[in-house]
Amino acid sequence: MEFPFLSYQGGFGTTAEPGSITWKKDAGVFQAEFGSDMCPSPAVRHTYRLGQLGGQSFVIIRVEVAMDGCGAREWTTMWEATPWPKSVVVH
Image (cartoon, rainbow, N blue to C red):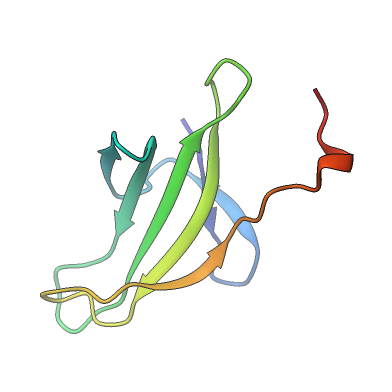
């Protein structure tokens, strides 16, 4: 299964190894964290929701980075999806 993932050269790609995944039931999203246990090292966190068409796809809604992934991480939003204009939403 492939997940949308930040490409280090810009844009988005896919990966079969998104990192450790945590389901956030209250928010209806899940987060995948990818990093190293070496210190200091950066970490990246992707937040996804299930797609609208039968929940068979993953939609990326936010990408965050922590420049020092050791100890308490301070996440900075690098990219966040904005809602599509209603004029282009297909029903």
